[in-house]
Length: 119
Image (tube, rainbow, N blue to C red):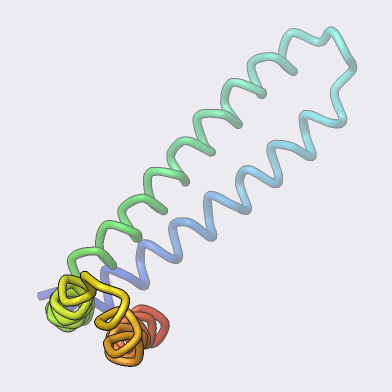
């Protein structure tokens, strides 16, 4: 049975292979004379190869979005954001703005640190 790492490694290998094929196709295209009908056909082929590579990159991003690490970070940032909202709601008057500023800054810093450090 394939592991997640096996799948990731294969996807990365496929992206690298597509990069090499695209590069070779561009080199061949650049060697063709302007107006050569194969040049246009090769341009279409290169575009299709790039679309395939993009699809693989999208799958890579989607896998990251569904990772356990991201889910854990989302739980932490949601809690920290709730703290920030609660502190901000207390700021209704000049006095509470002055007295609650440090609490709001602290809550905002907590959110920032979670985002910056990935959870």
